[in-house]
Image (cartoon, rainbow, N blue to C red; front, side):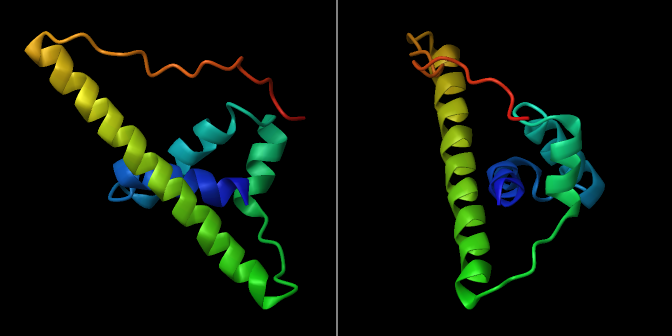
Length: 103
């Protein structure tokens, strides 16, 4: 499910790229939190749907990622616009501590 979220997250920027480029971007984002082995498994393994809600859960997770990706893209656009006009830009860095990798 994490891979589906990342796919959605990267789609607003890379959704129109060649599929292999988008896949590579997803792999790099997954590698920020997962070990290389787990990132590869997340991209290659497709769990068997045991109930109808599982398929809809995948779609919901991807949609949440897409929503977040659009919001990040909008923040970046706003930040660039403020920088171009000389206005002060707030930090987009999260206040919480950076989490480590999931092994």
